[in-house]
Amino acid sequence: MSDDQTSDPKALLKRIADLESLLADSEIGMSIAVEHGDTIENDLITTNQQLEQEIVQKEEAQRHLQELVDAITTQNSDLEIILDTLNEHSDDMDQDMWEDLLESEQRGTTDALTGLSNRRHFDEYLEKHFNSCARHKRPISLLMGDIDFFKIYNDTYGHPQGDVCLKQVASAISKTVRRDLDLAVRYGGEEFAVILPETEIAGAKTLADEIVANIEALKLTHEGSGVSDFVTISIGVHTFYPKRGDASKALIIRADQVLYQAKEQGRNQACAEDIHHKNGGKTVITEVKTYGKFDDKLVRGQEYLELAFSPSSRPITERWRNNGLSADFLADYFGSFIPKEMPKTHHNQIKDAVAYIGNELLENAMKFANPQENIASSLSLSLSDQNLRFTLINQVNPENYDKLVSFLKEFTSVDAGDFFVMQMERNIESGSESGLGFATMVTDHDAQVSWKIIPTHDTVQLTTQVVIDI
Picture 1 (cartoon, rainbow, N blue to C red):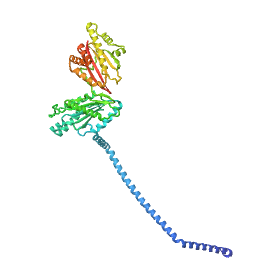
Picture 2 (picture 1 turned 90 degrees about the horizontal axis):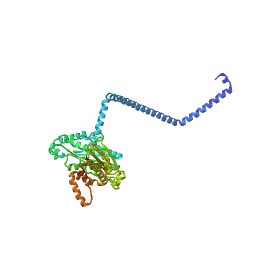
Picture 3 (picture 1 turned 120 degrees about the horizontal axis):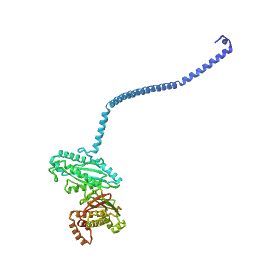
Picture 4 (picture 1 turned 180 degrees about the horizontal axis):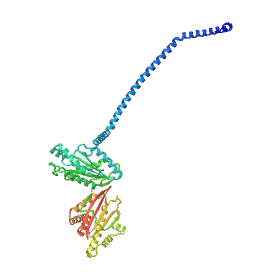
C-alpha cells in the first residue's frame, strides 16, 4: 500500500471494507466445505476407483490383443510353410487326390470282382435311358445272361476258380459290347446284363449271339456242363418301345422271361422269341423272324417298278382300278422287257405268273392288314436278266400275328404240294380258299417264296418276297 493510500482516510476505509467482505466470503466457503466435505471426499474416492478399474481393463485388453497378434503371427508362419509345401509338391498331391476321387467313384458304380458296372449303376443307367427313349420315341433293348450250370462249376473247381471264370466271362462281354452308349453289367452272382439304348431287336439279338459265341470260344473247361465241354452262357433279349409313364422294371421282367426260354430250349444260346406286351392297347412284337430263303440283296441294273396301295376295306379289284392299274397291265408292262427271242409260250407263262402273283400278294396283304395303322402297302417288282422279283411290304394287324406265324411255319416246313393238299382238305371242311395261293405260286410257277417279320413301333411289318426265273 502506498503512502498516499494510508494517508487518505477514505481509501483506508474502503480497503478495510474489502478485506472484511473477503473474510466473510472465506468464512462462508469454509462453512460449506465443512458441511459437505464428506460427500466430496466420497465422490473423489469413487472417481479414483473407477479410474483404476478402467486402467486395469485397458491393460487386460492390451494383453489379449497382444496374444491375438502373437497367434496370428504364428498361424501366418504355419500357412507360409504349408503354402511352400503345396507349391513344392502340388503336382504329386493333385494326382493323388484325383486318383482317390476316381477310386471312390468307381467303388460306387463298379463291381469289384469283374470291373463291369454294378447293380446300382445298372438301375440308374436303365432308368435314365428308358425315360430318354420314351421322350424321343426310340426303342431300348436289354440282354439278360446267365452262365450255364455255374453252381456245378463252383462245386467242381472251387470258388477261387469260379471267380476267375467270372472275370474272364466279364472280359469277353466287355470286349464284345463296343458302343459307348451301351452298358455291360454284372447283375449279380453269375448273372450279367447289357443295356442297349436306341437299339432295335435285330441289333440286340446279333450282339447277344456274338457274346454267346465269344464266351464259348474262351474254352474254359466245364466238365459238369450239360450242354458243352466248356463254359457257356444263355441270354434273353427283349426290346421295349417305352412311353411316358411306363416302368423300366417291365423291361427287366420280360428279358428274364426270354432268358428262361433260352434255358428251356437247350441253353448256350440267345433267345428273343414270342414275347408280346401291351403298349397303349396295341400288341408289340419284339423279334425279327425270317421264313424261307429271304434275300435282301438287289442286283444293280434291274428294271424296277414300285406301287403303293391304301389299306382300304374295299375289294382288291376296286383297289386295282382306283390306282389306274390292273393285274393284266402289270403283266403287259413287265412283259415288254422280256427278251423278244424268248419263245412266245414261255413269254406268256411269265406274264401269267406276274398277273397271278401280283394279285395274290395284294390279297394276302389285305387279309393280314392292320386297319389301325394308315400305312400303305408297297408292291415292288424288279426284273434282271435271270429272274423277276416281287417284294410286298405291309403292316400286320397284331391280332392276326399268331395266325400268320402259324401259317408261315407250316408252309416253310413241308413240301408245297403236300401243303396244297392239306389246305384243300381243310378248305373243303371250312368252305374257304385260304392258303392255296402261295402253294400255287410254287407248284405252278416254280416260285421261291420267303418272308421276313420286322417289329416296328406299335405294329409289325411283313415283307413277302417271291422270285421266279425267266
